[in-house]
Image (cartoon, rainbow, N blue to C red; front, side, top):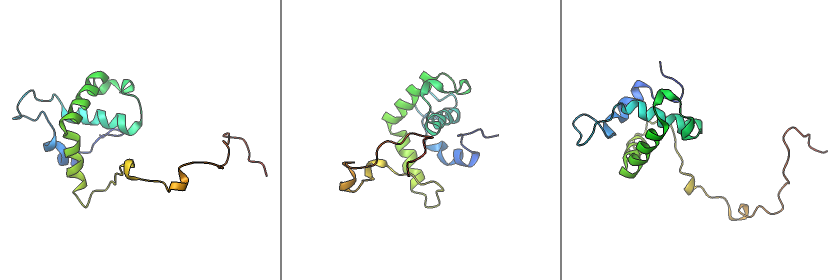
Length: 123
C-alpha cells in the first residue's frame, strides 16, 4: 500500500533508471533508492523540516546529506527534465522565479491593512 506522499509503482518505474546507486553503477550502490526518494518527497510535499522526517525513512541527517549530494550531481535535474519532456505528464510544475507581478503590484502602497482572523469586517 502506498502511503501519503509516496510514489506509486508506475511512477517509480519511470524514474528508477535515472537515479544514482543502481547495480552496475561505479561506486557504492544505494541501499534503497525508492525509500530515499519517498523520504525526500515526504519532506517536500508536507512542508515539514528535515528533522521531522518519520523514522521509517531512516536518519533525517543522512537523507538530507544524500539529497544535497544528488542535487550537486544534477540527479534531480535529470529526473525533472525526463518527466517534463513527457507531454502526458499529469502534474504541472512552475518555477516561481519566472512568475512576475505587474510593476505597480510591487510596491504595495495604499493597500488594505492587516485583517485579523476571526474578526468580522466593519461595514
